[in-house]
Amino acid sequence: MKGTFPINKFRELETPFYYYDTRVLRDTLAVINKEMAKYDKFSMHYAVKANANPKILTVICENGLGADCVSGGEIRAAIKAGIPADKVVFAGVGKADWEINLGLDYDIFCFNVESVPELEVINELAAAKGKVANVALRINPNVGAHTHKNITTGLAENKFGIRMTDMDHVIDTALSMRNVKFVGLHFHIGSQILDMGDFVALCNRVNELQEKLYARQIIVEHINVGGGLGIDYAHPNRQPIPDFAAYFATYAQHLKLHPQQSVHFELGRAVTGQCGNLISKVLYVKQGANKQFAILDAGMTDLIRPALYQAYHKIENITSEEPIEAYDVVGPICESSDVFGKAIDLNRVHRGDLIALRSAGAYGEIMASGYNCREIPKAYTSDELV
Image (cartoon, rainbow, N blue to C red; front, side, top):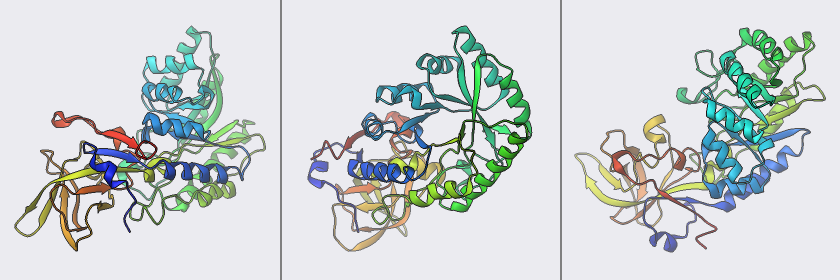
């Protein structure tokens, strides 16, 4: 079953472009809020790195989510969209001084700190402004995730976070500083995780670390478990909304909390992934030696995930009902890796047909580039194309 698209409206637009179904986005946000409301002190900071389109951020703000930012630019985008500064967390392994100062000027909720040198810089910059910065220490839990190796973040070999063996020392360092306030622990093990057992493993590790801290009579206010919940790329129509009930229940059942502690989540892909689609036009159908190619006007500059991660996106010919044929679906970029999919079954393709690359609402538009001097694709929402 194909997605439902306003084809006549699409024909009026220059391709390629991103199309966001805001009904899917709002339905997703409604489920998130419904499931989180079942538990005390659960809160969400949307991971802006997944999609920073201003129209998307505005809808997310309207539904009460905070923001998880990994750059100064993302902090500005979140604040501009109306997200309150006291719901903004700032993560990232390499925060520049100007970005830290920006967070201090906005009085954001928390800095997720990844090293002692970073902690020292935040303390110094906060002192210069006469402020005290809330900090959570990002601990690398050395927990693997069943996902692509390029999007795991919680293994000891990854660049992210503080080693568990260094946790006590870094906490002591933070507690000795006058211009930072140690308020929490932060974790994140990866992205596109569908096995709830990975999140159970994280809970178990957090529980171990909390026991160590409790032995020192330290109870932090906030536990931030990051995000990571994946989406169903193969069946965007059948499962447009991830299983948030199971996700939040996993943490409620397995994370051992003290009464005064709150839990923070940083989901990105699970929020916006299924609402977005890259719409492209067929430039040529080319017959190869033993295959045929559907050559699109969209390429890896518009959606890099297949080239970067060998990621799968469901591909549909949304303007043909002819018999199915197999195609290698490729773009116009002068790179051999500019391939969206091989041996893809599509309704027979002709020049001018419109092709939808589904589930592109996360890490699609935001990662677009101007390589080959190409224009960044425009974006439209279903609210605009009524």
